[in-house]
Length: 149
Image (cartoon, rainbow, N blue to C red; front, side, top):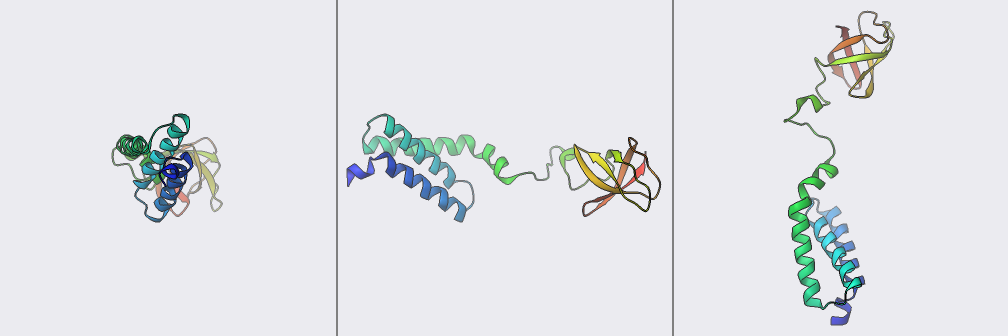
């Protein structure tokens, strides 16, 4: 039984099971124990070490990666959210921001504006030609209502 526990494949499959469990119990904690198991599998494949050393490596690598990398990985896994420290990155509230018209707006037809590198459908009460700068008055779904600066 001890020979099986010291096999690198054992640690690989333990890591795989832990990664699957992370999907069922999100919180981004089990993920790092999966990394620890895979690092232990790699180290035990390269160096012939005993089960006690493998357990030690597993615990140390899991805890260290958890403490060092969790905040960084949370940003990647969560995606974009409101940033209180930099409101200009908040894509939910574009009111008052300036944008550039990339396709003329000729009421009642809509045009397009660019803001933060993204094109948006735009509507206005007045004619606005391509290249002009506009201010966003409000946003409804994926349409921005704008006016000339």
